[in-house]
Length: 448
Ligand SMILES: C[S@@+](CC[C@H](N)C(=O)[O-])C[C@H]1O[C@@H](n2cnc3c(N)ncnc32)[C@H](O)[C@@H]1O
Image (tube, rainbow, N blue to C red; front, side):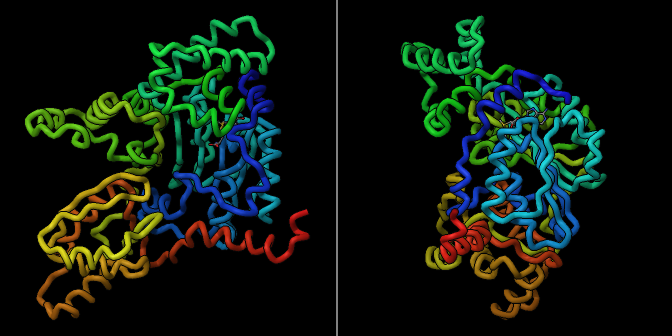
């Protein structure tokens, strides 16, 4: 097998992230890139029905992405997930989780990403590879190996670390490298790190930022300590390097999809700069340079999460009136009524990812919002508005022009997405869990 032995050793001893298979009886964890409705909007123009769909989870760890994808694909025809990892211990935990859920649509493969071209697993429509490629000796070879098993019109959901925002962690890794230089016991390295964490003076760079990072240690204990401070291979990317890398491997970066400011909004200079003159100058720079400015300016991007495709223009477009607009993750309650009750006033909302948003409704925002129910296409919404307002002269173009800026505000933070009307709606995660929770409620013997 083709992998770094230190890295495998780490994940055999400290499977990441810490997961208790028993928790599957109560809840389904979602992973940001793997929502089918999101993959559909960004990578398949909203038209993927996910039948005959094959997903690969490369470096699947303790299984969250494989399980979330498999749960969503359970009721699609002839669809399947392949899990791949070099760590047998991680795979054991992932399999236990899937067994508890009664999932039978996952194939388990012990192997390395770098061996994918020879593993004979077939072609995949979607590849999830989150938190893995920055741990390879050569991340170019890693991405190329993933590309070798990607269907021609397939796409990838990738997460790699952000170099700038992770600077305090990299300083700690250098410090622990010096302290642990001759230490062969992994557990001793962890114990030394705990002593150091308790000895950091207020002036220490990591200490000054520790509240951004310690949740990992609190949640995952020794596993978190190893992953954060003791990793033998951990490469952080800045935006420019990221574009060079993916383009060199033949891919087009579709969109950034991380939570909060790790989504598109965090890569836009106008999120942080309001001076029109300076913004005008920045707008003349190539797009990756603009995004690099936002990354350095905010210091908020600890992870780059994004979709890749070989094709350009894979996003669903508002111009297709057969598309159904829908709120992703949660629908703001009473929005149409609030707009109607406060004419001429700005509306303030907080997104499911806790991003504050303010917008001035336009003429038809209230009726449009009233008809967005996850089933109505834009065509149906516009027809209903014409009928209700008795304004038959209103053209689709006028209504679309009215809605577009509002849609952009929501879509920019992934709160509103599009699905083609030919594709049936996606059940929310809590409904997917209901099947499993019911099984353990109804039959306590299944708990044994
Ligand atoms: C930080 S964990 C991430 C796990 C999972 N993707 C997640 O996001 O929860 C990295 C995983 O990548 C696996 N890994 C590292 N190098 C690999 C390789 N060359 N091929 C396959 N898996 C690898 C490790 O064993 C580990 O389970």
